[in-house]
Length: 256
Image (cartoon, one colour):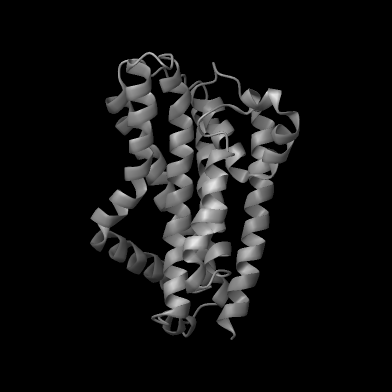
């Protein structure tokens, strides 16, 4: 593989991201911070929720930020380049295999997702203090979960970006991402669905469940969460599946 070409593609995407830094920050943090303020600040200070809910909420907001950032960073440019600007055609002529173009998109989207996720921690710490109680007992486990969640978001963005037309962008967010959030154990632990046993089992097909539970288990293990082994297994399965689908769809679009 031509590594110079690969690094040049990464550098070009980084330059574009820097130029669009303000819109990128708004689309990444505005919605999660609003949820944090309403549920973590307003509801807690009003006495409707306990102070401990602040700590429970943080990993879920981090998962949402990572998923939205990675999906948006990969899916939206692909939709635009394939269907509007056709800029992707120039990249396909680069001295590099087409599959590596997709991998470059995934790696850059995953890097953005990691930055967005890590930035949530100090932002929420400032917004919700006092009362946020983090217990990071295993930094390596946290790093592993964070990396797999970032890859999950980027691979999902690749699959969606190569499968959705420009007229279905709104449908993608309303029918795919919104249900994922509400049934992804972001605002509550998976164990909270114990009174709904069928639903509790059905939501396990939602990859965001493993992202939220994994971050919860590494950041605030004092709360109920799925076993970390199950989290790693679930994330690896969904990462592989979405990458396979995304790569197949990318190759199909690249040759048409």
